[in-house]
Image 1: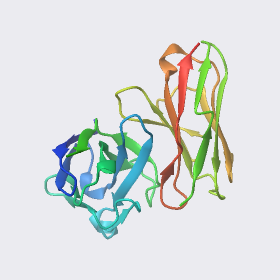
Image 2: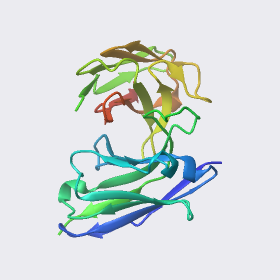
Image 3: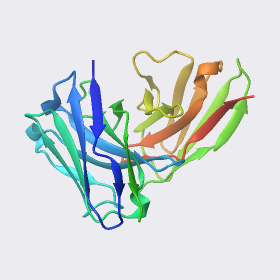
Image 4: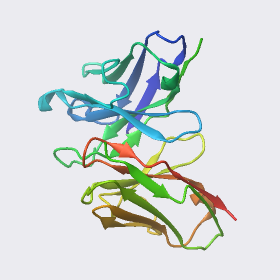
Amino acid sequence: EVQLVESGGGLVKPGGSLRLSCAASGFTFSNAWMSWVRQAPGKGLEWVGRIKSKTDGGTTDYAAPVKGRFTISRDDSKNTLYLQMNSLKTEDTAVYYCTTMDRGGSYPPRGLFDYWGQGTLVTVSS
Amino acid sequence: DIQMTQSPSSLSASVGDRVTITCQASQDISNYLNWYQQKPGKAPKLLIYDASNLETGVPSRFSGSGSGTDFTFTISSLQPEDIATYYCQQYDNRITFGQGTRLEIK
């Protein structure tokens, strides 16, 4: 059974930093393309960014609002995905979800999110 | 970025009703369009991928159609457990979501 468990959320002041983690199990993490998706309170879903598997180059891509401030990385030895968030703004307040991308076996993986974690809340406030 | 416009933003329907949600892309996205269901306090769940393909395990009362810029999501016979917010999402160019449609029981 695929499981994604996020952690690391909390309250941080504007301009501060936070690192989220996502522990993965139930699938071959090293082969997976992974994403972060966020949802501000009472609002819709917003894609944050994506990291490819290392065999596919391990490259990252980010949405415009977070580019240059957020960094996605992975540790395949620990089956863990990370989201390093710097220069945080109040508008970054959201639940952050870790997702797999197209574990159904299509190659290259399509831009769909088939497994989701439960989310972790990040609140940016003074 | 490609803009995704869903309509309506909310709707109220009765159990057994046929429910339709539309999603319009700001440019041609072929069939690179997915639909998700999100229940309150829960993570979203993938229902339909590539415009019309039902994800494994999803009830057959859910369906999707369309290509290019205009897409439709349908629940053929609304059930009480279908109360949720539904989102479309494109992946032709980067990734963007529609603003969501909140579905309530009348």
